[in-house]
Length: 535
Image (cartoon, rainbow, N blue to C red):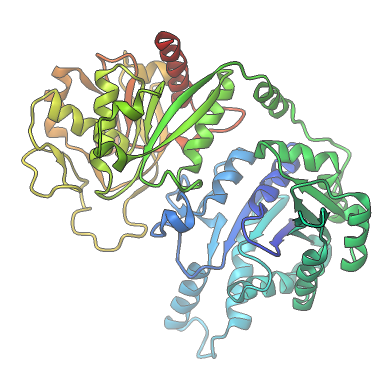
């Protein structure tokens, strides 16, 4: 029988429920259990694909093409397994499925209601993820008491009656704030949060207390007393300098052991974290630093390029250096000489994106990198702007552009993919998910990957215009990778440059702390080399 762990949150949002779930996931997996993680988001959006980065952060794309919450990125990086769109459950998906079933007569004329129809649909989606798994960890987005989250809480309450309370563990993550004026940590918000959860009908088995400072034994005893939880089931999760320390912090308190014990599972095998600990050991002994300019239009939003930043960090640690990511607003490069900003960088990375705002600044960044031999890594749109820059300033194709930015350009070096031109719906309609790429032998990309064929994840509507391929190749910007099923250009590299490479896909989604992505690994190595040359 599959066991289920439900992670809820209280007091405030962004407490780290996703990191708690991911940390427990990696600890259980390293004990030998088959683990899957599910995110249940109460928003009515069907998925995260059309949501603003200002509000939501990055869109994480799964291998099967689902556009999901960024927490699924944490799940993959921690448990090191490719999860699917089924691991993302939103209210939009739930209601769409129920309404479609009602329209087709699936309820035999019954009055369709939140209870039982919505809650049953939620439960069915939870159980579907459980196939062939020992443990499913499900995070409920938002905080206890949110109106939109109530159907999810009711569903997981009902599930205990459906599969047996002994097969379910409720873990509540809450805030223990520090009041500077009194110099005290306060437990009252946690008490109120748990009381709200109990009023709904859920008694937490474990409580995780987020805090800036250690939550002492006395406070944990107090929380346990007022929340009807044994003191040994109250854990602290203090702020750490790296999210990758959290599994060790929780394991030291027997968090994973207590979870298994509550579920009646074997606790005799300890988690094998040798490679994880090696990663942290490297993190603690970094020598030197390099600066990577991240040129985008949402750089003030911490989570907008989350997977890119994590991939850079993974590669930096593997190379033994601290990578200082220098956020550069693309529009700032349009208002003055790019060298005033970019001269401070040892390398330049332009991430993916959509829309015209800041594009000319990104093109300026590509031009600066090419002319000054600065390592350049372009992801998705980052590749496309490098192509546009090369077309304008090397090939002499005046006004070369992408049709996304200029429908009247005389040289559409980036154009619509087949079937994308007249699409009006923006959600879930672009080229999404994993596609193969055949690498051209003798190219830098082929050397870096050490393979003839790879698979990477995509999210785009526009592509390199193959009509210009011969012209580019003669001038030294060659096609290093092509999709064998559709002929799309996947990788381009500048052979006259020490390290200038663009990819149409998103390699950041496949980077792991213990296994950095080879492109990022090599890119940071190039940044280190350039730093030494500069200094």
